[in-house]
Image (tube, rainbow, N blue to C red; front, side):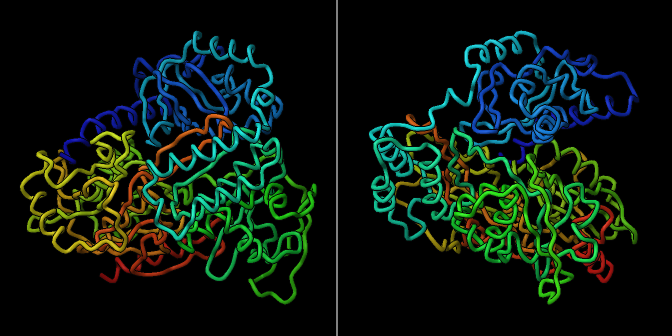
Length: 603
């Protein structure tokens, strides 16, 4: 059942890769849907709305959050517009998308491939050959004429009675569909009563959103989110990026060309507040999860420094003071004052390295995202690696997506005398909103599903006897569902019998947690680097009717094979190696990859 579900995705993914190669390399005539550039007055989106600064689009009748438009990241498009036309970002994105992309030095065809997140269920979706039409663009233009001031159209304050109604709806929806409603020692009624007691005659939507966000962050759900439809109004951002290394935090330029100070990579303080105090102050605003996930998210959140200052009761400032040192405990640091940036700096995909064969005849498979389009890349790379002496699989910084890359790679890692194995176990909330096949998109099914093979059914039966979850509430939940890995039977699949090292870090999350948890402890596989973030959710969303606040929460409780939850823990590694500061710079040394190579050479 599970393996057969992957094959149609593989075919679509292969076609997508061939299209991109044809357009970029001009090696052969392009397929029909890529043969003509999109006009400036067209759009692939049937409708467009904004959730704060985040676009939400309608395609083929469903609403999505767009991620990639024909290999051009939506975040990159918005950052370009913020830089070049800051007062017209929404108009240009909605009405002049092809022209905007051309101004970036890229091009999109008349039919585009889209990567999106479906708002109804949080699923990452790949849509191929979506037409850019004038009718779509006219519809968006007409909508903009009806609401010329989008920000003003969203109420920033609502009456107290409506805010109370939203609190009741928030509680009701969590009771109905939130898998981790009772995971933590959280008195939801008392917390919501405290929020209600703070209300005046009218309630700021932004303040209500913040209050609900703080409550939900204590739940332990790494996918949980509360987002206001009203922008914060804060536009000051750090003009650099932060990342954690062994022993401290480094500050580097967004283009990764260098540190703020070449001799002093470590940031000791911001605005005279020690960096560790900033991290501690930011903890309530991120999920009460694993330590590595908390620190990872807080450091990334510091990019929006003006908003952070406001939350901490600090005064606004057009600049930021940085205290930098040669090492985290440098007794003689320097101070540097930099102007704040209107544009939020982006991390992008890191490390940026292509798959290929390394020295010593070792394969290197880079999987920067968990998406269906990675399936043909994995298969073609594994064909190239057939004669290699060992394999490095690099999923660092991979924030998740779909599970098809795991099913694909796992098919190469099971020997002829080895049985399929259970990689993930979960229950979902028994809500009327969720269908009986709610976990099918996660390649999971009940033990009695008729589509299991005999070998898979035996693997589940053996596993279920010993499975002992660390936390379980069967009341109000579905039966157990299982994800089983083994050979897929795909053409060209073979048994890779050499040692494999998988690289991990705190940026690994969601489907990448499942990837790591599914491979950990397997014969010939070593996990190296840093523990993953920890999260597995089948995230579901809803909006509160009066405020428009968007809420997302986990609909399933998801466990590792050893019975431990993914959320709050992550997946530990067999060998801990932390990056050095220059790992985050272009051309810097990657000691984690070096460590993997050393292990494979020794084996």
